[in-house]
Image (cartoon, rainbow over all chains, first blue to last red; front, side):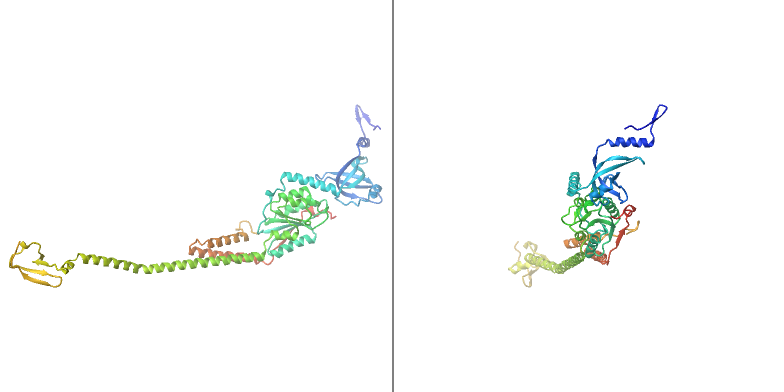
Length: 384
Length: 76
């Protein structure tokens, strides 16, 4: 098939429709192939020969218009919803009237559980290799958060469980809630945005992401790479309370702590009021007891000091008396009286004790001191 | 929330930590009695502040408005 062209001088020129037709022929040579994406903007009308939808790349957001004969589409009975991940077989074509590229689908397959599991497993391995789930990355939860952030769906159960759980333990807790879509294809970016918003609140010290149980597909956004990375990058610790005990969305691995239920998450982030009050009471009792002990100890010390103070002069006096007695005894020992008592006498002449007989002459008057009493005598003879 | 420029209110945790520190110091018993009494007075004050914090009947629940990006999405 050849596309008609006209010549303007030496230029070969195509009309728009000829150009589009040419592109169509060119595209027609491309093989039939499979494309994976999310179905969005699905339009189906009984009066139309075709159904129209857009295939969207979940990672980059790139879009591709697609069409499929309505009868064929209906025969598949897929019941596709917006955002569902599918594999579409078909080939590229051009809508010549508008020069628009589109993908003519011949069949559509919903992505199976196995494909999802395999994709999650691949992502898990690569994020683990990156160290995103490492134990060293886990941060301790604050004991007394100034405010608790909650990212939750509009579904009452999970949200109610967290709020009630927090209130029951610690009524004074300040709670900041960011409600968001938690399921469906567009949930990933919403969860990420909500987490970022709540973590940016100046008082929020810890965030709980809560979502009740659901089907495997319902929980898929919580294994979305961007969501998992947002958990890991959150500036405050994150508690993951997503799904039930047996569910392990990847966000659980990136969170700082994983709680089995929203109620358990509430218990993890706020202290127990009753326990706190009891603890405060204990602190006060210990303080009182310590002060009382310190006072008693000081009183004892003071009492002992006072006793020592009182007994100090007596001791001193006693010591002096003993010393005095010693001195007296020694004095006694040195006194001539003891000598006199043994029968010696002191002879004095003119008030001075006589040592030499020659110092006197016959007729001199002398005094003789005895142990008891004294004599006055006259020298009758001197024998020098 | 404290306004900018205002001395930020000390957290319950900080107050409680200070109380615990005072209790510990008093229990070690190596402070003079004058200091012990000062510490005890401070401890009583901290106890009162902490208890008052806990007496708040009910904390606030704040709802963050969704960004426009969130609200325009059709519900499935």
